[in-house]
Length: 53
Image (tube, rainbow, N blue to C red):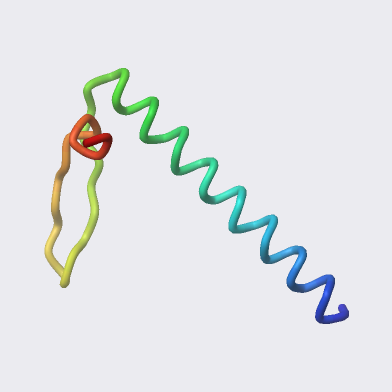
């Protein structure tokens, strides 16, 4: 693959990941659900509604 093709593919993948993340947040907000992340090796639960603030 050429560099241009690799960059184009990378951009499309990043856009897809961002779209999936946004959809996940919207769905969890409608369900009043939690999202689980790790920060510095510790598990953190955050209400999805808090992310829109």
